[in-house]
Structure formats: structure tokens, C-alpha cells
Image (cartoon, rainbow, N blue to C red; front, side, top):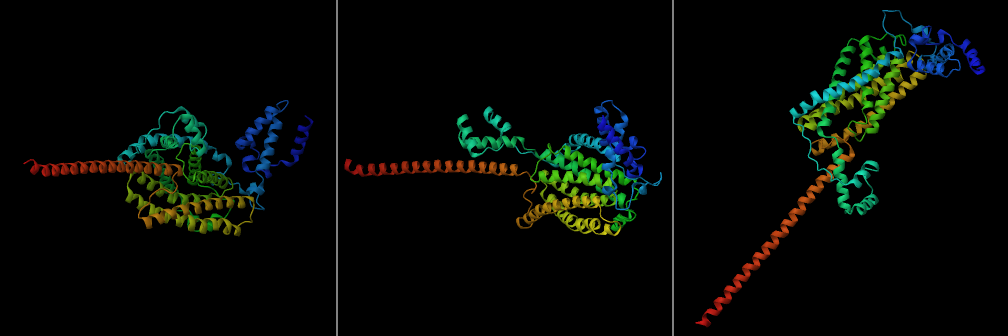
Length: 459
């Protein structure tokens, strides 16, 4: 009790409306972030006498620590300096992003309906076919090892399992390959997933470009910082932010059930970095440059998803044509426009309008993380371009899951091996039949000669 009173006395002189953002000033209870509200409830719960006053001060302590001006505002700018009158626009507040969570669940529900009512019939219309896979035989010991230990057993595991089940190592390896193929996503599932992303990226790019056509910072990137941080946000740009953040949050929630590819870890890092980037840029009022970042990313993503759709449908020429357009646009936007215009304006041009602070460094670090991912994906795309130019076609998606490729190749080799072994057996049988027939002919000729040689003597 004495400690609580000491903390309260220490906080009283330090809490003033000028040291807090508009969302944590006099109307702290009304505009406080959800985290602060939870902490206030926890303080009330664990206080010996459940005194709301101490909880209110704890909430104020959190607000004072989280919303320090040195984190969010350039040096010399205070929270009251960016307040605007009602009707002049919207100043970004953290509580505005609370709608992204229900939007994420809404996107998941819409995706479920879209894939079954639109994408699945459309896949059949385009002729998407799922390969016929051999089902693994029911062997309980192997099934338990597959689910509890590993999907790809080591050589020692194969030997032990062979002894337990009384099977050869070749049959154990074949069983695990067939079992992995059963869990692989079908072409129809991949098509539905790609079509959902195609629709969103296309709509997001079209709507984002339409909302930015009349914005001066689309053509002159220095306008991103003119008047910063007192920059009202238009309703169209606010919803552009909320919808993009809700969509990427839904992708992060579904990452465990979506098709896993080689760049699975990079995709998770990308989604997390994008969420941090969108959320922080909105709270720090980097909305203008944030809209440019989202527009650059959406400009080529829908082409990639459309190329995937036609790849799964077997439309090779259409897929290759779309891939060439996507590769050119990706390399230009991600390796030229993004670092040369967007990153440059945040790193260099912004310093002409304010001195660097914590938000400046944090935001640029997130942009550089995205740029590193762009370089990684550009390497994969250039590999596909090399195959397209020198081999005549894009054989595989470089981002396909590595395990499925190995299984496919092994299965093809197995089929080829079976065919070759049958051809060898057939050739052996034919050679034996031919030798047998030759022997029969020779025997007949020999017998005929012996009969002819005996006739004169008989006469």
C-alpha cells in the first residue's frame, strides 16, 4: 500500500496533457489505446482495494511511456502542435486501426465463400486438372511414425522401420513418398488461392491508384513531407490503409493452412514487416509515403497471381507471356522505383523538412527489410527468366515447395523405371522366344536332312 502511494505521488507532477498525444490527453478514458485499457483493468483487479484512481494513473503512466514525443514526432514538435479543427480532416490515431482485426476475419470468411462459389467452378471452366496420386497402403506403424516423428525419415529410420514391418528399404521409401503426395495440395487448391489474391491485388491497385491520381505526392515525392507531421488524412487513404492491413493480417492468420513454398519463412517475415510498416506509418502519420509503398507492391502482385492461375490450368503460352510482363514490372518497381524514389525520399529527402528521430530510423529499417526481400525474390525471378530464355519455357515456379518437386521427380523416375524394367523383361522374353523358335527350326531342318539321307539307302 505504501509503495502504491509512493508511485502515485511520483506520477502526479509528471502527467500533463501537453506530454500526451490527443488520444491520451484530457479524454484519456475515451481515446486510450486498447493495451492501456487492459492494463488499467489489470491494475484495478490486482489493487488491494480496487481503487479506480490508481488504475487511471497506471494507464496514464503507460500512455506517458508509449507516447513520448521523441518516439513519434520530430524534435521541437509537440502533440498539441498537430491538433486540427473538426472538419479539416482526420489526424491518424492508433485506435483507428482497431477495425483491422474484424476486417481480417471478414476477409477469411469472404475467401472461404469466394473459393467455393467462384474460384472452384472457374478452375473447372479453365480446365484445371488434379494429378492422380497413388494412395499409400494402410500400415499403422509407418502412419504413426509419419505423423509423430517425421515425414522424411533418415536412412537409419528406414532400416529400423523395415525391420519392424518386415518390408524392404525400397518399399518403405516408396510408402513415405506416396504418403507425402496424399497431403500435397492439389492444383485446384493452388488455383483457388491464387485467384483470391489476384482479385484483391487487382482491386487494391485500381482503387489505390484512383485515390492517388489527384494527390501531389504521387508526382512529386517531396510533397510527402511538406507540412509534416500536421498532415490531415483523407477518408479514401484511411480505408486504403485499413483494408490493406486487414488483408495482410488475414494472410498471416492463414499462413499455416496455405500452400507452403520454398520462401515460406520469407513470406512470414514479409507479412510481419508489412503489418509493422503499415501500423507504425499510420500512427506516425507517414500515410503519404505509406500509400506509395502499398501502390508499388500491388502494381505487380496481381500479374504474378494471374500467371499462377494459368500455370495450374495448363495454359502454357498465356502463363509465359504474363510471367514475362510480371518479371519486367517487378524488376522495375521493386529494384528501381522502390529504392530510387520511395526509400530515397524517406532516407534523404525527408531530412530537408525535419531532423531524424526514432520514428525515422524505425520506419527506414522496415523499408530496408522489404528491400532485402525484394532482392531475394528478384534472384528467384531471374532464375526463372534464365530458364525461359535458354530452355524455352518456365518449367516450375521457383517458389514451389521443394518437397513436392522431389516427390514428383522421384515418382516420374519410378514410373520410368517401371516402364524400363517392363521393356527389359519384354525384350528378354522376346529374345528367349526367338532363340527357342530358332532352335525348333534348326531341329526341324536337321531332322529333314537326316530323313533325306536315309531314303536312298532304304531303296
